[in-house]
Each structure stands twice: as C-alpha cells, then as structure tokens.
Image (tube, rainbow, N blue to C red; front, side):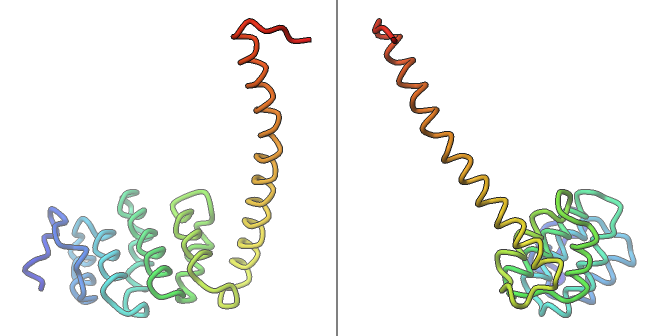
Length: 161
C-alpha cells in the first residue's frame, strides 16, 4: 500500500495503515504528518495510532498540529474511548484552541463513566452552559415576536397606543 502514499503532496495519506511508515516519515521530516495520523486513526488500533497522534500534536506546523487533534477526535468517534496519553494531551491543550473539537468529540462519543475526572467535569459544565443558553434564547423569543409585531403594525400605518 505504501506506493499509494505520496508524502510530498499528501495524496493517499488518509489510507495509511502502517505505523512504521509514519514513524519513518517522522524521522525523515516529511510534510503532511497530521494527515497521516488521521489515516492511522481510521485504519489502525487505537494503541498503535495513539503515540503517533501525540507526536503529531507537537509538530511546529499549526495546520498539521490541527490535523493531529482531528485524529484524536476521530479516534474517540471510532473507538468510543481514548488512551490515557491522548486524554492528557487534550487536557493539556485545553478547550478553545486546537483541541476544542477533539474535546467535544470525546465528550460526545466516549461514555461518561469511562471519562477521566477532568472530562467528566467538562461534560457537566458544558451541559449546564448549553441548558442555560437554551433557556436564555427561548426567553428572548416572545420579546422578539412582540417587537416584530409592533414593527409590522407600524409599517401598515396602524397606530400603537
């Protein structure tokens, strides 16, 4: 399968299924390593892909680093779990940055009982925030509807008392 992987252009790297080939690409300093670890997340066992994903999270190229975090989110989606090292890497990066979507994927696809304590707290905080935002948005709907009705009435020449 290695003949279908073009490290220079990135073609075919989502199909990478050989951790040793990715290790060699790291040693050679190839581009598109973030794309390659997404391929590993799709094709390999979590324990094989995890160290390479973590290594790609440390790349200097911000785009490739972002792809490494995408690979972590992909692993959470596919396996319904992460390795302790991946949980720690996501926690270290924190929400709001590269790890935001990977953290959200983890909270969505990993069962609550299997999450480490930090992720459990994050899931609870996120759930409360979402509920409060929903209530706030719903509470503003009647006001918005009333304002719209008044505007429609004024535009038709009606008087507002």
